[in-house]
Length: 331
Image (tube, rainbow, N blue to C red; front, side, top):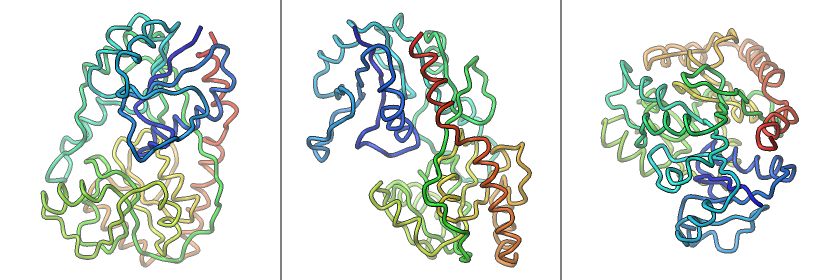
């Protein structure tokens, strides 16, 4: 007897917070499951990943499609750790076996977040809201990882973050941006501002630099690889552009604090925490950033520590996260 845990990434494939979540799940949750877990990654294994060893049995869907289909057909249950945002035949064929679905984002919120913004385009990967609705109707348990309310009935199990670096607030006023460059991340806020960026450089150059004629003359852009993330965060910059619209949890916001960077937040993120450096437009971002340049270090450090305390008090309970998930998987 075994259960299939379906995902789009994880292991060596780490391009987003969803992949980080899957790796934490393998490390902390998988060893405590009552029924044998088998990971099915809905991709073809990239050649550069070689003989990477997963902590549990794992298979790449594209390497042997027939094997993957039989794996799902003969499973007791299917649990979706992170799915594609478009219809997938392997899930449609086994819809009666879907026990749980992890919601890492809300398609409805992503699509709506692009309406009425000051960006000249609203780019994000292709998303199908009807597919999201269908999956959540099939799943016996929908689990939402975010910090705001969504339309679907769900069990809210927010992500957790483990502070490992605990660096003091940087004295630098240079901007940094460590994120994907889809529309809701608002990279256009950095138009003309001196900034360091860690993102998908090809997408950024095609979509934002060339597509919107954004002034990138003061930008230093580093192509995202998980191996360079630590080095990037340790560079001499101190203000984090973390003003992401409809950000579900925000590993990057927590990482900014962990590495001693003061975030400029979006007005929609964790609204219960009173914080003076929030924005919802490019104009507001420029205004707040100009203010921060003139703000004494002591004042910025006060809010840095208050925000960190809020994070620690609300989103660092690893044991609760593990047990809440096990209560669903081990039913």
